Image (cartoon, rainbow, N blue to C red; front, side, top):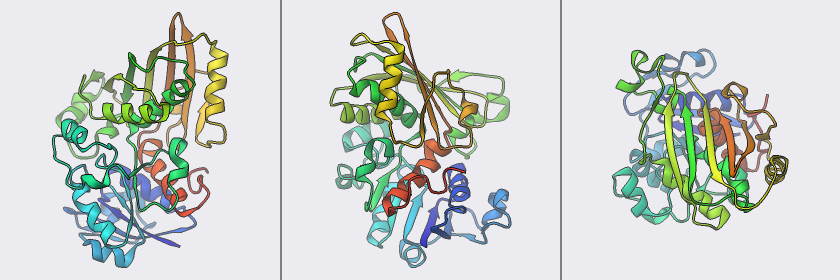
Length: 336
């Protein structure tokens, strides 16, 4: 059994992680931490009542290393980069769900996140944990940078078409919509019920922090300089992401040919479903699937992708990374 700790266990992604890991046949959850909360984990997450008998503790890296083999780090950015070097030095493997190790260039991180990266020497060597693209690099790693939810949706939708040379790498428009849980559990004015219910609103127009992450990964896999215009929207639902993506066609191809290319690109990838139908967020709710389809309209290629932001966009892909890291079947605990 692999002993697992969750650092920062009070948020939505931590709850989803615990729900998945509790049904994993090779895992024993041995520690849950919080810097601000105390008490039994079920007091914060009542769904875990009678299923996990652990108390929230503020444990040092050395104490965590005595109890666990691997740590899922669910801390916010900046806090993560402060904690992770000490966790690694203590001998733990780490899967980081923050954005602190996703970008390769510390200057880009500073530009988009407004903080100097204090562990910048580790950035270039850290594997980006999107298994559909980087599965062969994940086994045996000590640190995995788990991708974001908007980024996973956008990257998975675009990678096959860019790698196949079907669309131009510049001028790509990503119109993405996410449920309120994507903003996290910490109360904020714009996510209060009276503010977001019965309302739809864009935010972070032109400066959303996931933009350089999307461009970095797509440029890497396609070997082209990819440039996107990414606009997120908040929609009044609990969970789910829908990305509607518009790109210029680079070479003639029918809708059927593009769908076949996407299917071929993801052949053998268990969590990608290429569909004829236009996907809905309900199609993938509470699952680790990402559904993708393609349409050709005049000179444009339109791509539509959906996933559950808390599972395939966070905790589910984190468990995929864990499975690959330790050599387990990739789908373990992720398919009913």
